Length: 194
Image (tube, rainbow, N blue to C red; front, side, top):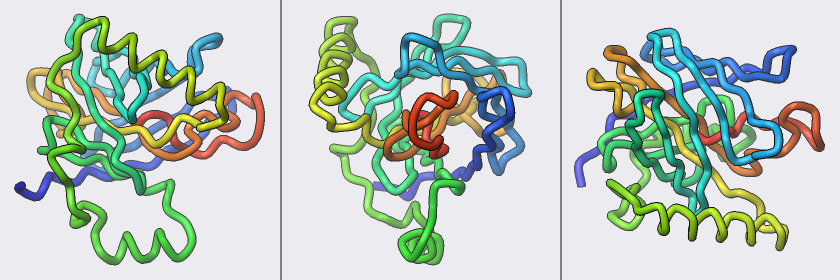
């Protein structure tokens, strides 16, 4: 498999409980959780695009643009999210800490092996999406957490994430992504569907 393009980003929690995400390629997003639906994030960016990111389960993120276009990503851990069938990997620079963060930053995170099993789906049926939502709900109920989630990229056609042109979109990443967002629990940990 070819080495994917790596695009880093960092999140900043704002006073109103929303998140300002800055990508290394100049794309910026403003993100907010939906009350009553902890697995759904609404976003808009500095290029005029908007939409939602939903954590479905099995580390799959569904990105729906305002124009109805849908793309999928997969959180592959260590703050990395694969988009565009593995052509791009978003890297959450704000989620690294301790020795592991220093080690991964030194290696270059994208150099970690990406397998075919980690690739996000090209498309999903409503039934497949619902099965993943149910899986996610069961994991939450059993205390399994939400897992990491991905980022996004931006392309000229607006269908896929942060590249620097087109209508743009993007997402985030991390473990315990739902911990303390909007002051409802522990502490926000900069991991909202990468």
